[in-house]
Image 1 (tube, rainbow, N blue to C red):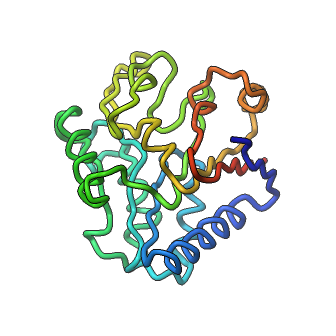
Image 2: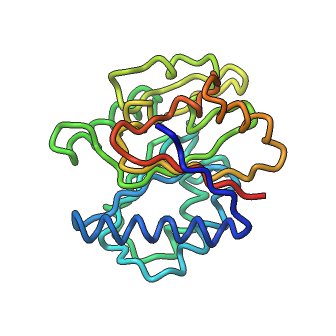
Image 3: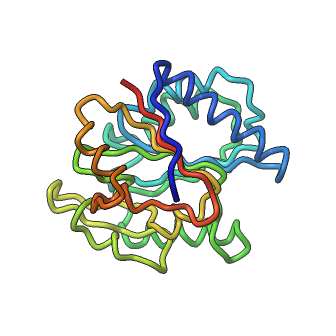
Length: 225
């Protein structure tokens, strides 16, 4: 799939508008909006701005594309970042926020998260309306890092993944989960990442982020300066 590549001079505003539009369309069509959040520093101001928008949060389901294997109050936790910048600031029902349990055994956490998502999808693949992703300087996205076992997974939707360079276990969506989404949007501050992006967009890249390819959906790269 050929992605939409948007170079933005108003990154936060454009990201929020994209999310709002996806939410409006999903709620009108299906009654709910399933949004998967990414970690890292780039989305923080996006989440803060999104929290001020008048979405019908009772109809929003929030998931996470990956998590570090730490407790939810740990400073490294993606959930903690999202809670501080978005979740605690909006009137969303607690049951609509699906947290990856980074504090338990990674394999158990991955299986539990996948089981929850499949149950909500009637036993099939949970199809997100919008998955937000980032890109690391090594081309990783979610916790799909170069050279790690999760890259080869084609059946499971959520797996535990050991990242040797960080000596840490992660929990992550797999390509089957990402590629089932109606829309995947990479939020990337491109400063210092131009060489990686050039290779990703070349069509011949081995970077993990380049392999994301929604089967029946949209793929957008929103690039800030």
